[in-house]
Image 1 (tube, one colour):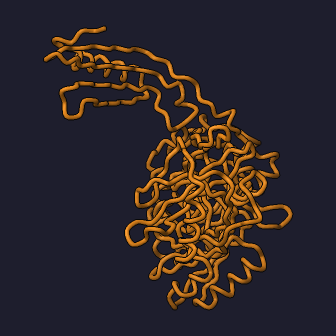
Image 2 (image 1 turned 90 degrees about the vertical axis):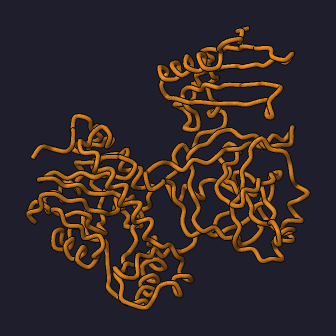
Length: 488
């Protein structure tokens, strides 16, 4: 059978270990679609709970209880003796020791093709728990072949095994994994115990409280999938707030929160609207109202009410269930960086950079002993838990290139002693590589007519193609600069 992997597009990192992008390397595009679909499917099925909520949300019954590995969701792809992995972000990896062992086990089992779901993780030499940023460090830029050999693959489901989907029959999936891979230390079934709801919390105490595991995953083909984790606590700066509406008027609705980067700039991280008593909502609103300042940056809450920004200073402690830095497609989660101008007494928006999402934030208390600075509200609170790209970049590095005007056309027309104006402006942003917020080309129409109900109208088009945007410019000139209009 012809290989589904174009190995010439892979990049050698160390020895037999290669990486690449799925769009370049994988000849069957359905593979990446399947990986992303399985990641979304798992996200929809899995309910995240802390221990207290799990005690009354998980129904009585028997479950498969697994130790949660802090790794990267990855799928193992196997075709006729060849194995590689691909994650939802489209990163392809092959040639590590666990890839070789997986291929050997599957071949010995007589398997022709497979798509297997699991966690890519690192076996730390000190025996301590591995974190997801260990995976990122080793898998992307290993120091030596020993680091590559430390990569492991913990399997939690089989999506395809010679045409059979085991994903909704977990008992059969785990049994099949154990039959194929046995007790291999690098590619194996996640540690799993069968037990009732009482056993879940015994294992949580053992694995999480005593052995520092990330959490437990509980599966049942009938009750669903649950992820149980301890809650994290974070100290965050309050940069804005909104008031409740209708019968909640006069009470705090939610706070806008930020972490502080090493250069002192603030990066928006989350909103928090839960965990407050009604009395706290009243008192905190009274505290925040006198601190309102101007801001060039605006954000709205869940009711589409704009946050009122406040001067930096207040710090609160929150708890959260999880912190994630990638979407189900593997994309970064970008958040706005804002900067406080002490002279002008207002906030300025800078640009977005990768950060993360906080799952299930809850207010705990105001930290009167802390202020909004890079030591008390440090971004490393997040990077110690999850991998955050571009962590060391500072505001001075974020100034984007100036745009370049390609063509500008202004025309006027007089009708009933009123002068109408139409302006076409085409420019190249020069920012498309530096920021996903900006397209490569922008075409803008300003259409002014004093006799209309709405005198000033605008229309805009964007494109990544210079040829396409210039063709659209010509079309607009033919459409808008016609009989009676004079170019000035």
